[in-house]
Length: 517
Image 1 (cartoon, helix red, strand yellow):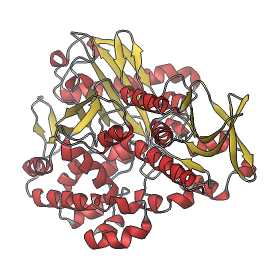
Image 2 (cartoon, one colour):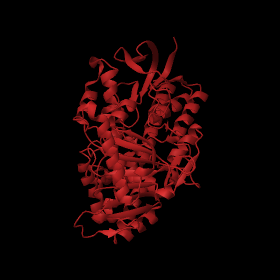
Image 3 (cartoon, helix red, strand yellow):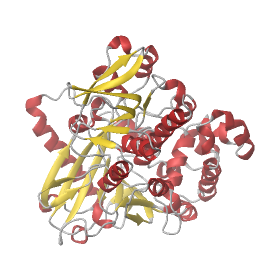
Image 4 (tube, helix red, strand yellow):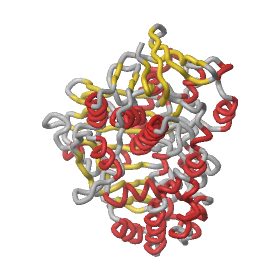
């Protein structure tokens, strides 16, 4: 029986990048996926005459028409063919006013709000707009972007701790940045509180609020979004998955769909092979796993074979955010509906910590509404449009919902989310819905096989953020021939983060095999 150099478990973003890296380096590579298509969250589904994007809101690192970004560079490097469309703005944040709010005003939609911030791309443009909304915030905003620009020059050191001392000569603020949260750093820079709230809007993409999230990582994310704006594949995120599928096959890698790994075979204290669909055994030298460690240790290993450190890590870490998404196929165009932005964040309070506290319950009025037609006009049939609404929760918020009440419950949640968007934007949505699909945490759990359906892995907190995870990466892997990739790893959730961890794990395996280690 053929023994592969590397077996990759799971064809999500990280697994695809890992398999492509290994196959292109000439390693005999097998990618196993339990579903019938690649991509995990990076796929698509059809309801009626609409094809929906399941998860990708916007992608940082696509770059500008003049200069490729990190994501585009990776696909070019691997030979993946993707057509990109770009968007030269970041987000719009709307905070509807409550009774008694002294700083309330009526916005362009005729809604009484305390915050309405439509933020452009470009560092200076972003800072000018922030200063327009909150006078006196320009200098602190530019100081933050100056730090993030210099920080990017030191990023290559993070994967090689031995290089950190030399990097400190060029970026002396690096260690100081590592040790502070967003709130602490922005306070030190003198940014007004209201400006900080707007500045921290993307906290939900990481799943941790300003008081928990480290400044270095958040600035890396915001920097990527603001520098050149955002992007998305012209044929949705599944275009990226299919592009990497093709890369792997062209490099003579094997991909087996409908092939669920049901057990890891151990020999001499380390993985030696896998069992597929409870029957077929396949053996390999190295393994890269794009699955949740919770599911891997519970489902694929005997408890006696699980390293004690891995169990301690699971007990110490918190499961990150879970999502609820409502997908809407509309029988009106975005213009007829009154939609003028691609991505709008609607929050009951502008402060990220208060938003996080509210998200401990199921739906608290926090919702993101996206209209794909804003950046891909012809993504739906003529005369129609598609919207997707997303909210987040933390913890097992479904534990008290009985099976017989599930349908009624999810219908109410969807209705509440839609009505929140209608009121915040002063538009009408419900009368024009042609197709609707509602995905609650159990839906994502079924497809992603993650705790509580989270796509985020584990919460990035001050003690367990990108820097300590990166420095400890080698020591945190369970076996000398078994590596994890994806959202559970050092950079948390995000398409770019997943691709990075997959390419990194693949690169380590390639190096070990090439050096004969």
